[in-house]
Length: 346
Image 1 (cartoon, rainbow, N blue to C red):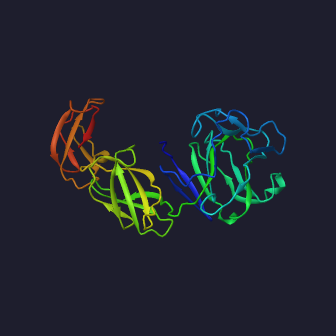
Image 2: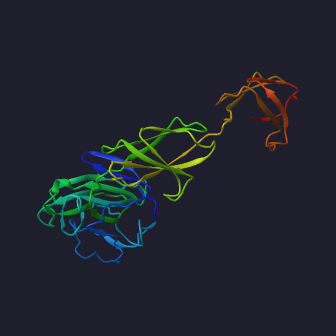
Image 3: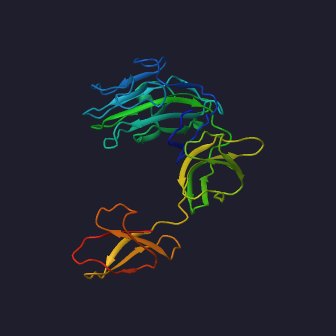
């Protein structure tokens, strides 16, 4: 199953970043634009300023679709876009069709297209789209998932328009637009780590409901969800203490709302543990004479003894002259006048 790189959700006024690997309630409708180069049945498009560019359908001009081969897209225009891509009529029902989900992507990070998401409760004319669900959405250059609650429209029939609005940019892609039910147990978002040591890390997330218990699953980067190590926790953040030094990890989090009501897992969030003995940095030389030099460096752990290796410029580490068990700084003697050197510290 495809891994989603990033997800943005709109809960009222809050926009939250997250990722997921499990789906939501079956969608009332979903459109993946795999029907070729014609607009999907029931959809409509309006080129409101009648310029040369409008919404198109098919293989993206650059890169790939979020799923399958095709997406909806609109390309560069020297005049401001005013182009509407409009869904079929949607009857908004609580728990069944009150969540809008879509994926967006920009073609270039230097020329970012924007679009508005508009709502009509009357029809599909431009003047009917008098409510803005989200203004000036600007996706990055990777496929990004956006979710918006439609709870304000429960009991109504609506149309949703995606209005391209940019001028002199490059290209905007949309894909996999769907309407489904809001989950009863919201997923956590904003996964993060802190206080990472060689063997421990604080894992944290944002709880978007009322859950006071969570399931964490972690493992090697890219592990298949369900095959990692799972731990049930009741604290956020959670200090995990069974890690290995100098190792890469992914982790996911699931909210447990009680009574068997579980959210989808969110993730992965990637992190790495450091080695048990950190390498020194910021090597410097001072107090040079014809035959001596003071060598110093920054210690990044708790070490107090070091190995120095030095030699002519470009020498291969392991083939130089080594001095072991020295302190910081170290006065190196026995050098040759008018000679270039390099040195390493361990």
